[in-house]
Image (cartoon, rainbow, N blue to C red):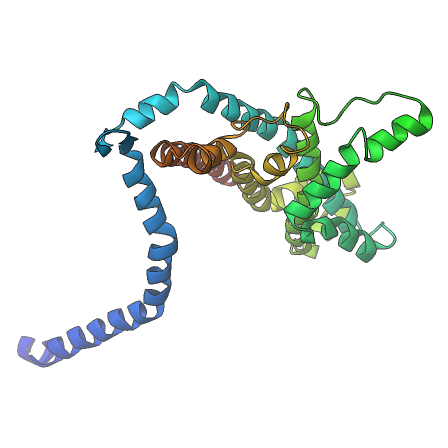
Length: 306
């Protein structure tokens, strides 16, 4: 009886061959992506790590220094000054930007706003403007001699604070980034709100819940995943701050230094100072810090969702 139940001896090799074909079929689909991913993502990171372990010297060329560049980066006052700027930017600008985007998305989703499509497109439109163009436009308006601020000063006989002064330039950059990305984040939140089941709203209406109660108990919990994603993207974008200070530097040379942000510092080290090895070290350190903070935010967001 046991011999009748057992599978024929030839079945096992055929099953192994079918499994092997299935395995290679999957790699046939994933392989091209993995190849491109390795070339454009993993290879530059590996090369940057390799560069960060060397130091170029006037005598002897490149020499292996181990983690000395990383030790120097953690003791570099200019690096930490730039890091402080992006942290302050992150703590102030990101909550304001996400708060405005959330309010706009809730207003659009409420169904009580006339001209909803017009407002949605108008708020999203700045995201379609390239960052370079947006920064040049706002830089012109910030000008006290030739721009909007200067015109207001002359027309009204007042002396408005200079937006490009050392004390206000970070807030001015935050205003530009907020103007650019409110529409993008609004679209993420609005898309998440549109997939909330209508049965939840009907149940809340039967229970006599008001609009604030619906927002607090239904809408905000339903879009928690979108909030976490938008927060992670904003954190990554804050630590990568480069375009706006780089372009405004020519308008405010006394306010924006070559180490105003870590990315600007790495760029200056590489293309002005020819310090490729130390520039790679700064980039790797910022990448690790960004990855850790984004991962912590994701873990906290997922834990709240459980």
